[in-house]
Image (cartoon, rainbow, N blue to C red; front, side, top):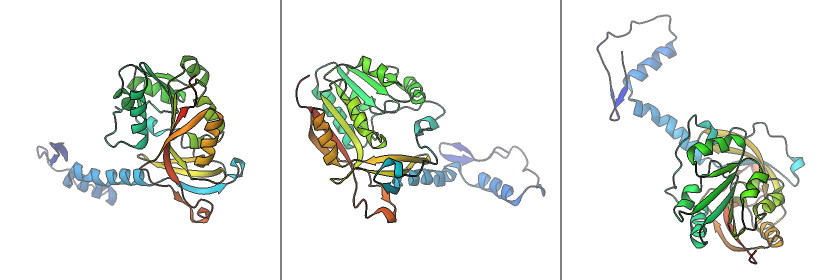
Length: 297
């Protein structure tokens, strides 16, 4: 029997064959499963799964332990970045400009429209060039360069053949020229040696540096945390992260020759902090900061 076959969103049942004989040897749960599959339209069966995906997407990251030094944190049990959410897709999925514009989307589009053509963008840890569609809406003359791990670079090349992907910083830096834009979105907090990451962002003397979706707080010392990460595919794993106050970030960028020109609070939710750690982190925000070179290089 060909059951529950969707047609224009409505389940249909073909009765060309007689019903399957009752098999007393089958477990009760297996029989119930077949009954549900035959009687309930597929569109309804997908509702619980979609609700679960939405729930996991909306669950904020959880900071389960906070320490003054990275070495004081427990080891990561399941690395969230060894199997990135992008790699969960068996085939390349289309990436388009998001309908809901967050602060870092607006920053990328605005800056690409300000610079003289051609525009070069260096995206540190940019996944399969997820911000490339935003940049393309502002300019047709675009040289987009992504530094990522080898597996994501391979995936990104299938989605955006015009983007240049590199898995070593030396290769990427050879292609960069002064006066462009450096991006670091949802990445800096996962660089425990964050000052070296900032040095890499400014190595080519860009005109602007965008640090987006950065979990931070206003002041205080830099702290380190063990973070549990949830995404659209469910629980992704754990990661060590640095909680870098905006004051420390601004000061370090000043030393590198860049001044803050804009800081926007993102629309993302503040991560859930374990009860035992709330006194150590009274409040966190997700911000997108734009820095500009103090002098022309």
